[in-house]
Length: 117
Length: 138
Image: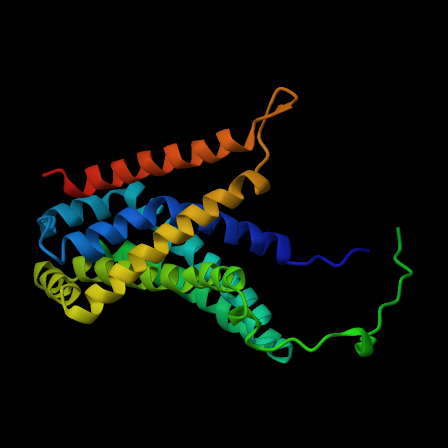
């Protein structure tokens, strides 16, 4: 019997999260994090934001982006701490905090998107 | 097939060189690697920021306006400017690695790595244009 290791699944989530965050986040940070706050571009009206986020397709995409990106963070951060700080003895705790955090964040994302009328 | 191999926790330590915890400061390439890995912190921060935005929009026009004001405060703006740079670094390094993880075949021939890379850049540009259009169209 082989023991099933979660590593391939976690790597898939890491990889998928890496791709979607790379594709979508630079433009979103540029718009909502830099250009709109600096006044280079006018902020979308509240009604417009409600319409965009209330669209089921956008909501599903936003959920996918948030959840996969969080699992991307969890996997990469765990491995970086493991390589960088040599903290093998904290492996289980670290896995709980990173993947657990990503799971909690995903549920939060689903709840917040669900609340949009 | 049943595995008969028995592994023990015993490692012969005398062949191991002691590596400093700060090994990644020794060479620029190592530092660039850690910098690349640390882009994930900015990915996580931006998920938090997006969710704050979604929560603010759900909370009504006033809370949305409060979030917009907060996003213009110096420390949030500075953090997001840094996030933008790290996101670009993340995207470029992730796409460079993509052809090694994703070997595409047309028929029996593998598609050249350069084309797989170019495909990612085209998709990136298209996705960015689509997002900008959705957000900015009046």
